[in-house]
Image (cartoon, rainbow, N blue to C red; front, side, top):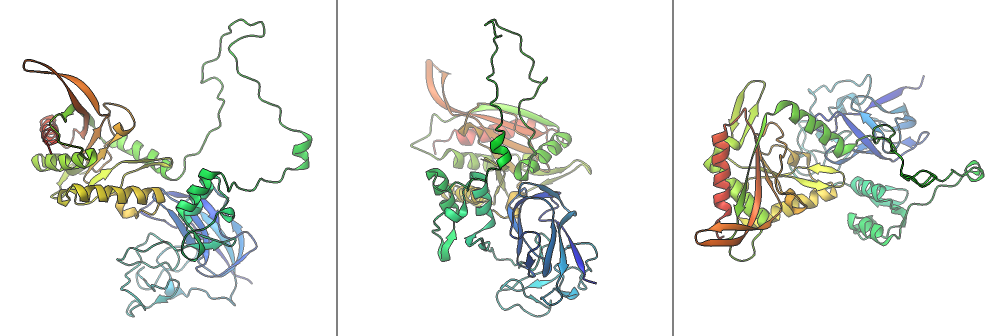
Length: 455
């Protein structure tokens, strides 16, 4: 009797409850070999390529692009081909890939070759580098080490591209087969896809029209009007009576953002203080974001209570000697908050280079999951778009977030008359369980004092 394998969606990183299918690299009935690309999945943090756990025939796939798959549920079913390479029981990667998968004999730790695919014994060094035990956040025989590694471009349909590039192409409606690659070895890059989308030169091929569709075209929607046929105004229904749009299931980053915001709302007791930073004394052109980072660092040194983590279950507080600032980055996919590490050790140039690097990694969806957590305080520079004051959301375990509003020129009363000063609205939201109003006010004053310095 031919053995079958049910492959359950593993945890793709940090306990995420689900992931969204971006693109299948196979279809039902295809034969796939061990560790060949099976599917790319979008999580709240990245686009992850999932390799096949076995060699054999694909019997069933759990949904199509855009479908959300819950962690631990069926992702694919295979008919195992014993004539093709299979992973031995002693070569498990530490993930439970499906029902009946045996546990690894070494306690869940494996060592993977830097070449990918080949697994060496725990005591034997791999051919290159110094790999370590599987981190438990990827699947298949994917390598894990202390070095930062780049994704591998996968050839599907004759086109080489990384999973994140394929996800962007799908989102922008670009047919990768019609994009001219500029990367090494003919790899399609992010810039290639963006350029094609901007030029409108590579739209996806139109789906064939069925005869039934041609025979019965949909009737055009009636034009909306608040006038009756006699031309008199008529009463319209409130928006809640008849919804005109279609429900859209949140996926990927937005799905995780919704969970994080709900969790923060349930666990934090937020209070907000607002004031304006007076920039009248500034000399020359300066980087406002870099100055905000410097001012936050100065305030954290003055009042460490807001550069802290708080555990509401055990009522314990952890004060941090270093300052890692979470920088809110707005994207079309949702909100990312990468961490600017050791901000208290960086000068203005280092801050700007760090922020630029994080933004580029977020836009390309190549930022490591470890860089999206672990910050000690947050900054939301929402004033780049609009708005003066806000109540930014404090995400546990942090206890504070600084919001910067839109720069303005205000009339200020001074001794002997009035002047026009540049001022930056500042909003400080803090968890009132973890720090007092006096601590928050002193923190805000220290921040404003640093912002007011000439340079």
